[in-house]
Length: 336
Image: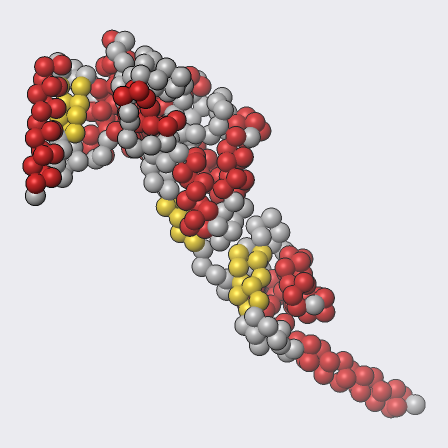
């Protein structure tokens, strides 16, 4: 009787083993891309991601294998896209997920001086990020409170840099990366506490955002910051073109736009700094705003050549002479 029971148990075990192997090796019979989101990177995410395409049985077996594999290897599921071949089995899928064989992260560079709007557009184009969700995050009251930003948005307090993200990543996650990086840069600025008085931070960020867009070469940033600091000190209009362009969104400025008093950012009309940053400055522009060069210059104009540098002047007479040199250089370059 015992021998018969043992034989039956062995037979049942063999049948179950054969069935298990059949399930483990059953192909998907279709190509499939599985997205494991950042918000859910456990084995349960595997079930949610493949159930609709591969069926409940395949999802359950795969998630079980993933759970076992993660425990054995002490790994965590990496979020991202996993592209599965048509003949991939549950075992193949589990192995891929456990060992993080996912689609490479997308490299996105955010140039210095970009506004929130331009950052949002680039994220959408380069990485499929939801631009509307990104903008909403930047304007959220809870976000502004958390980062101690007393302004309508996070403009000026996101750090331009190169970031790596998942295609179609969570916009909030990406925005958090940029804001956190900005906080790290602020905390490293010489002589400036990241928790400094808000008016000081806002002034520095606003000045830095103007310097960022006016300077074409990094080593002129402290000099240009010094020009604007001198103008602020003597109560002279800043007359910075990028401040007018911030609301118009156009590269060319018309005479009427220079006189437009409805544009509160127009530094051709209003003295002092504009109400807030006109973009997101990088580290060097922030450093220049914190430590502007000490000199007597109050004017500057582009050289008009390939150096991308400027000529600086103390008086309007000197400045007008530099403007003539600029125009001559532009004429000569147009003839070549």
